[in-house]
Length: 443
Ligand code: DGY
Image (cartoon, rainbow, N blue to C red; front, top):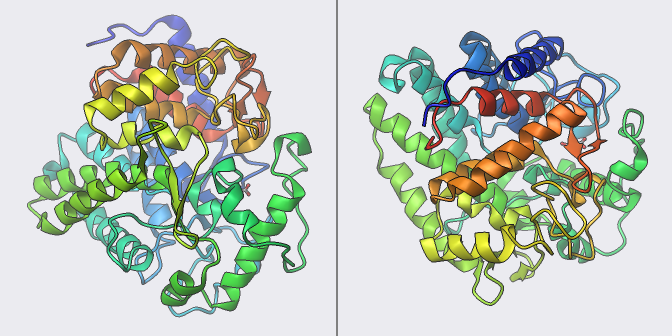
């Protein structure tokens, strides 16, 4: 469907989103938010590039090339790249202890990764150049993408289960999501290395992770620093090892995009097809027939992490569920007022934690507020399964939220009021993408 002429208010919204992305620009990359997050974050940059692809493809390419400068020789693309050195942000570059490692790049980075949206962003850019076959940028980035995805499978799924595991909640991108509570409780009382939080300077403490969560985050970083970030040791000894549904959904979708890039570039496709087929079997294990939801798998405890959050719905975005499972996710959960649908205490899609969870907190980071990247993923997933009306409602809510409260980090689902950091880049970028898209079926 062609949406036709863009209305004046839409044009103005695209203009203010573009202005924000220009203000947050720092050399070759975009800061997620200039005060709270002044470095380059992995999945932020990929989401930002998806929006930039609609208005300035050259800048979108720079964004991704700058991210790849942080790639380790092992193939890992880390979650933070500190191009400008230390800042007001904690953890500071030296906290990670990565500088002296043989695999680390010239620029300082964090020691672990984040959900791999990158291949999806590269494919979007290639599409806007008439396909990867015509796009020197896609050809140039393809080896870096393959090497990252190979690392993900080799380092994080050495036993070939089909699903990769994360070693820290920050790798999920949804740091304090309640789905990790049980896995973290198993760690017992921890002693983190000495540290000083700085994240509550720009954002109210009530909207940030609680102190106990931060202790656990820092404790795990300290443990992994002591293991010199060695992949084999980390997989063997990480006390937190979780097959995260959201991470694997993003990965699956990215590998569908990687497959399409490989075909267009005339590259070998067997390895990628193998990853996709193994992942399909893996996702079957994450499905819980009784509740009609997908749950993370705690590798260390060998049990599911039973908590209903937006991650449970993310296989819609991957396109990895059967029609029957997709139908259950939508009718029993997404459209259920007690869980995610507007009504019963919320006005907008999509609270990131089910409203009837004991852990639901509508303003605290990943404990319930609406995040626009999750809305964006689900809009894509709903369309893929033919839920076009539901996707349209979620798209309208997403746009209404920014018209009401601006481009903030997250939104209170009860009234759409702003939470978290101000001037948040991916909120601007993804709204540009939604406003300028000309096709509903965009898969
Ligand atoms: C933070 O500092 O809160 C980030 O989410 C870490 O990636």
